[in-house]
Length: 203
Image 1 (tube, one colour):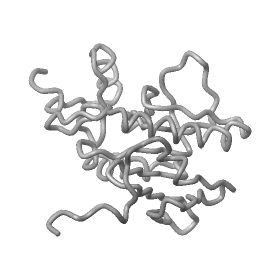
Image 2 (cartoon, rainbow, N blue to C red):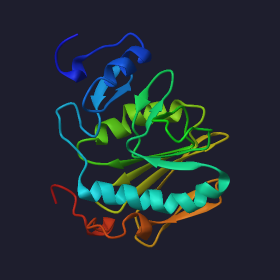
Image 3 (tube, helix red, strand yellow):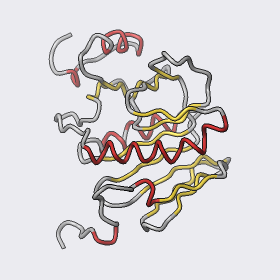
Image 4 (cartoon, rainbow, N blue to C red):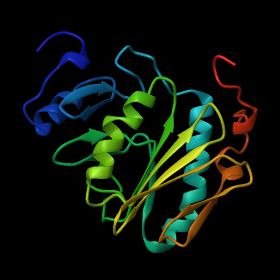
């Protein structure tokens, strides 16, 4: 196979993994397509200080909630691989047994993506669909870098429940987890403005 990585096609996910592990950069495999990690197909990269600060804040806030339950909170470099896709969530919570030297997990109950301009199409498109289609994911969380807004999909018996949070004083509820995250903790020490101060384009 030749050409840009996004143009590559693989018959199986195992074939993709074998290829990706030989590459100097990380890639994701979603709906049969290869996606550069933290970049859109045009190559707009993520990985800013703001992004990293938000990821750190989320991981710090989730650890005391899930560690007492025997779960692990991981971020960015840990791969989530199923029989249909491979991705690097910005933050994930897994309660399945893993060894300390493992570089991938097969399931996660909570998946978080910190959305940037370069990754929004992927985060709200193939990533969201693949995550919500799994049997193990209980929560999918989208965190904006442009304004203080957090969106949560929580699994319920009748389907997914969606809720968005846009007030800096909000506490983000994880249904059935007996846990709430403070919006202020997620955006602590960042320059992300409150949602109400962001003026929509064209106004």
